[in-house]
Amino acid sequence: AFYPALAALAGYLVGSLSFAVIVSRVMGLNDPRTYGSKNPGATNVLRSGSKAAAIVTLLLDALKGWLPVMAVAWWGKPYGLEEGTMALVGLAAFLGHLYPVFFRFVGGKGVATAMGVIVATSGWLGLAVGLTWLIIAYAFRYSSLASLVAAVFAPVYYAFGDGVAWVMDKSLLLSAIVMSLLLIWRHSENISRLIKGTESKLGSKKKA
Ligand code: G3P
Image (tube, protein in one colour):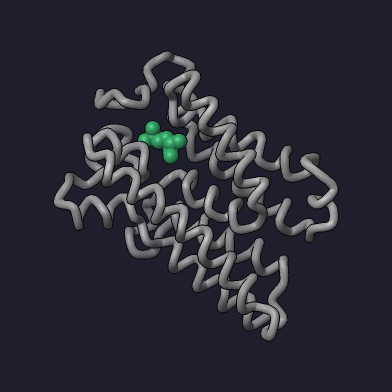
């Protein structure tokens, strides 16, 4: 259990890099934890008015979920690390984003990072979940609603998408379910805003 634990720790540390805060600082923008939804995530960075900063945040937050899982897939075999460790490391990176050790454990909601983890475990699944997000975001203009719908569908696609899902280690499915549940829970304020009709739409800089 030494190597899986070490890999999980590395995943958690990488996940703890809150890129919304880091990118904003580097680009001389306000701290995303001080405006809008106060969430350190790409959606809220977009509310600063800088599309570039939001895109870089999205890509880096996704990369930090993708890379640890891929690292296990590429280099894990000699150390006996298989799909179970991929699932563990992906979950660890996701948890790092939610509870970053470098930012007093105050992190984001995990959408981009979960997306990176999913793409690393299956390109087709990533495509399906990504398209789900885009369709809902385009139709309703709420980033949070798109994230919530994608989070509900991700494990469903995983379990029923194709036969491949059942050949794969169940730990990947389990980690997808855990990520979805945590992600939905982290959106509880968004859910009440959506119900009240006060959630801010994509493209508006209004306070969330
Ligand atoms: O990525 C998080 C998104 O789903 C909602 O973000 O800032 O609107 O709470 P935000």
